[in-house]
Amino acid sequence: MKNVILLHGGAGSLYNEVEVHSRLLTGFSKNALAFHTPLEITIESVRQMEDHPDFNAGTGSVRRLDGCIQMDAAVMELGNFGAVMNIEKVRNPVLVARDVMLHSPHVILAGDGAISFARVMGHQEYDPGTQKTEDLWKRTKEMLNSSAQDIPARIIEYRKYSRLFDQVRTTDTVGAVCRMDGKFAAAISTGGASPMIRGRVGDSPIPGSGLFVGKNGAVAVTGLGEEIIRRSLSSSIYHRIGKEPLLDVLKSEISAFGESATGAIAVSGEEYASFANKFMSTGHTEF
Ligand code: ASP
Image (tube, rainbow, N blue to C red; front, side, top):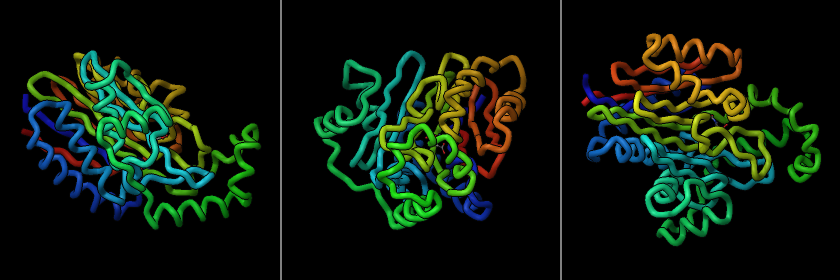
């Protein structure tokens, strides 16, 4: 069985972007093979996607309703996990998540604590905003027909804005899974799913929701974090590995999400597969 690195660029992208991004991701997956463990290969893949402004992760992350950028990222291998939630002003959240796993006594750091830790680990202050996400934020606020400041106060009404998830494109979250010599790893990074208020955490940094790695494989998913967390999507996929063909498992689990853009990539000991109910760019390299 060959080793493989498999990447995704988010479910719900535009068709023409999917073609371009899939070529990019294939290139990124090849570049990542300069590294020599499944963990390092997935992290390097995600780092490259974070640095590309087209993706909603690192540079190019979407803004929250108050205009700030807070990002989530996670890395996982068998028995090991690290994540950051709501981290701000760093270039590569996935590298901070790696540092949480490898160089801290904790597995998850959030908010100000995550930022302070990042600085201690040498991650310089960096503005991940782009003109594209600035424009998207302005459009989102126009659609909500309300000042950004009002929204947190009206949190109880917030659910009614969920229909906007379909209308305002904030997809393009990124993830990677790798199988190498019988070992597995996953890494994932996102600016989140707009519209969202400051402090919102999606599925991406939650093991069993945004990603999962065990002795039988690795899974990374994308879509509306709230729905993914309610269904523990990565864990649900993982626990069916080896019992049915991998692609069938992905299709069946994602069918529960209806029209809400949802996608997954997964590797097992024998297979690798990707599936999304809306356009999702993917790239892979066997090695
Ligand atoms: N899952 C991410 C979140 O909800 C967004 C995405 O995958 O597009 O934060």
